[in-house]
Image (cartoon, rainbow, N blue to C red; front, side, top):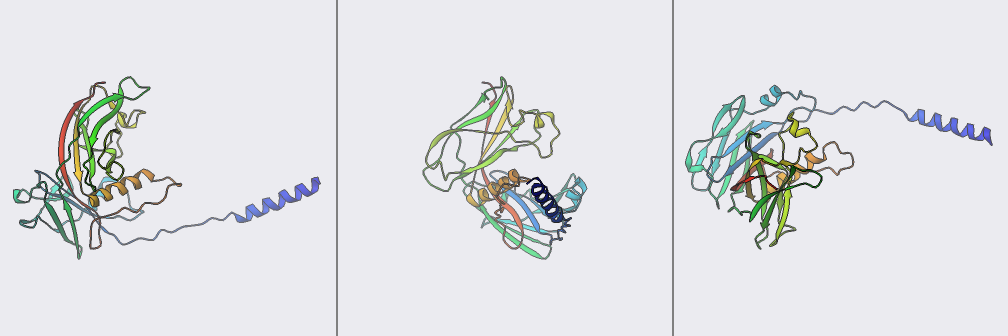
Length: 289
């Protein structure tokens, strides 16, 4: 019996050793695609960033990122009455398309088309700036287990009409250089249609931030004493679809057990990305429990 056990062990060991094989996987270079990140909101000009996807093996430094921006494109925005070609601007090494022409500044309730001619392609997209739906109120509350860190809470009433969607940004005075999307910044009314409810949001961070507050255990919380400027936006559903799938893909990155997520773009003509309108309302809250 002991000899049989030894024989079985040896056979299994040989089988497993035979199964070991070094596999070299070559990831082919895919054709670069145009990437659009464009937005227009009430009271401000349209802003469009146009770049190209980079090779999987390309460097991930700042120079590579800046070199991915597309120059010399023709970018046109129209509200059906006014049609304006945006001006190419270079801001600190980044290529941005925008305009000072107030005829095409965003207005609530209007629809806006985008046309981009670049790299031999013509990309198009459409978006709306919905009437902003305001929150009932905001407040701060310590998270259980912490004496001075917690979430930003809100009370919202969703209208009875279906098809509403939202996105939230915050900026802490003296701490954040810009409005940052909250972690899980978008939601629609599929489950909340016509309801009044309480919920909270996680604080968003700058990508690849080295700020001690952004890598600490409390990185998703606000701190008591923070002055929080809240930018709450009403968006249309195609705009929501992009950010909802983008954030899901970003959250699942590196998780081998997560289902792959296809990012839904509203860009037509061979590019990817988003052209989105924002109906905006602002509030300010001092974080005190």
